Amino acid sequence: MANEKSVDAHVYLGCSKALIEKYGNFKIDAKLHNEIIYHLAKICELIEEQLGVIMKTLHLVLRYKWYDLIDCGAKTSEYRACTPYWNRRLYFGGGVLTPRECPVYDQVVFHRCYTNKTVTFKIKYIDVTTEPNDLGLDECWEIKLGKRLA
Image 1: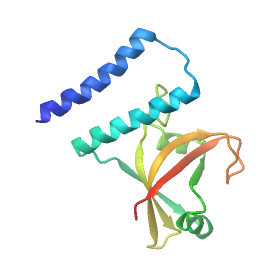
Image 2: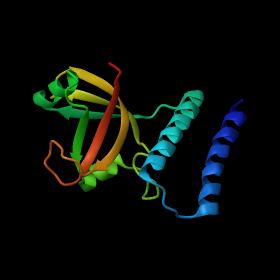
Image 3: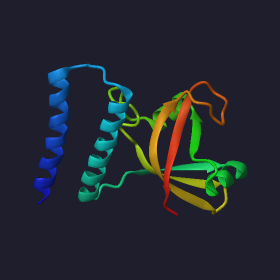
C-alpha cells in the first residue's frame, strides 16, 4: 500500500515536469493560472489526506486590536513586511514556484498578545501583495485566512 501511494505522488510530479519540459516557459492568462493553481491545491489536499501529511502551523502573536478584528471575522488577512526574516519564514519555494504554489503552512494560530486566548484558521494562501494593507507598505506578505478551525 505504501508503494502505491509513492507511485501516485511520483505520477503527479512526473506530469508537472513533463509539461515544463514540453512547453518550457510560456505565458498564460491570470484566469487560467488561478484555475490551475486551484486544481493543483485540491490534488495536493487529496494526496496529503491519503498520506496523512501534517503541515506546519504558523503561530503569530497579535495585539488586542488586531486579534479582536480577526476573532470577530472583520479582518480576513494578516500582513507581514517583506523583510529577510519573514521572507525566510513564509516562503520555501526556492524561487521556482510562487508562494501560493508551494505553501509552507496550512493553518495559523493567532495568540491574543501573550495570553492563553487563541484562534485557529485554515490558510487559503500566503503571497506577496501590492494591495492596500494594514501596514501601509507598497509590498508585503498577505496571509489570507480560510475557514475558522477553533
